[in-house]
Amino acid sequence: MWKINDTTVKLIQGDITEYEGDAIVNAANTELLLGAGVAGAIKWKGGPSVQKECYQIGSVELGEAALTSGGTLKVDYVIHAASMHLGKSTDEDSLKKSIINSLKRGSEKDLKSIAFPAIGTGIGGISKQICAKNFTEVLFSYLKTEPHIFDEVAIILFDKHDYRIFLDVFEKELKDN
Image (cartoon, rainbow, N blue to C red; front, side, top):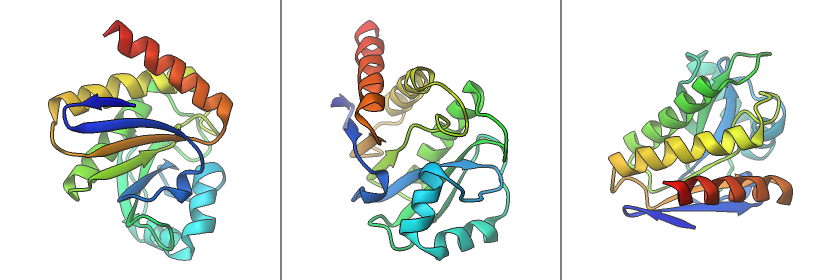
């Protein structure tokens, strides 16, 4: 756990669809089609209303983020971080932009808590180490320049191995800064 201004940043091993807060972030494609991985779990647990709202929004620009309700999830909102085009890979630029734009969508709604998955590491193909390094750069920079926005930002990793990778990268990157 880290404290940046008034925001607590947590790494959690678990299921992001069980998060109890204001919003979770979906690792999305630009078409906002909920397929497998995190998006599939959100579709399954959030119910059909989440995908229906995505259809109403339509496609978004690469790196953008769109907001829907949380459906039957324990959160009010899902923020869809479009880090890749449908059927394509995630790169570092689109990853960074999708993280920043997700934070902006949360800020615009005056949310106090938000949880991210390891965006782009599934079908997007980006390594967990690169994802974690980009999260440390973007997230901590954003929270330092935009204080008093969130009370909590969590990054929720599904398994112990991914959690360990993120923890190691976070500790190294933040010790060096």
